[in-house]
Length: 89
Length: 210
Image 1 (spheres, rainbow over the protein chains, first blue to last red):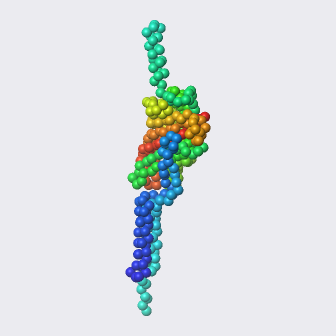
Image 2 (cartoon, rainbow over the protein chains, first blue to last red):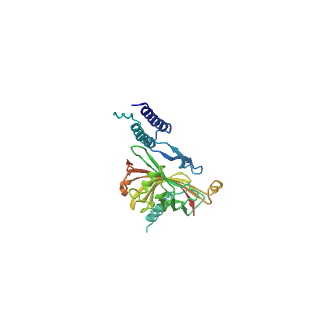
Image 3 (cartoon, rainbow over the protein chains, first blue to last red):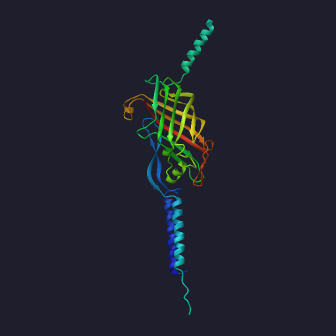
């Protein structure tokens, strides 16, 4: 494995690791969400109602997509940057 | 009719009147309330367990209404409907799947409804608050079945606080019941994730006097 290939693999591993860390920071949700439910109390009747608010939650599905894309691109680049054998005369 | 029978008949009549459970509020007689909410506060929520992640959703386009005699809540009648298209779970792709022909089929069956048939087990927890069970015809995905729901209703006579919300008396309704998706011909697979057959439904609506 040459230096370029090693760099590509380390970069790919770094991207996958970062995406998993971000997933953890957002609470280890399975599915990515763009809205979440919060509770709101009705002062008149004491009812608790649920209200949607815009909030992005990074889910495992997004980490898996990014990881998959990284593996594919990293694999292609690793192949392209392989040490080519010199043709002997 | 002899005297003994007359006395018995009067006693039965009086006990029927006294046992009729209703609100003890300023309002009297028959009242009608609509659940159409121009303020966008009324909602029905549903909850389902899945192996991966539990799902909580809401439906907000609510229509319908009820009417009843204020002093005798067992006279309750009416219907509540929700638009299937207004149902959401926080993930757009999942919502689209839920409304599709393979699931609730919103195009063919645009509404889910609950039509009241009878009320039982009425109990007064306060002068203006009643609890009990309501039996109704629940229609979803073109199938109608009887479903019993626990309810809690609060009657508010018009006052300075209620006027800030809307004119007239207000009726707060909370109800809950479970439905089995398979009873209504609804499959319970959402993008490869099996949803529980039994869904918990909660109703939190305010009725506005008509």
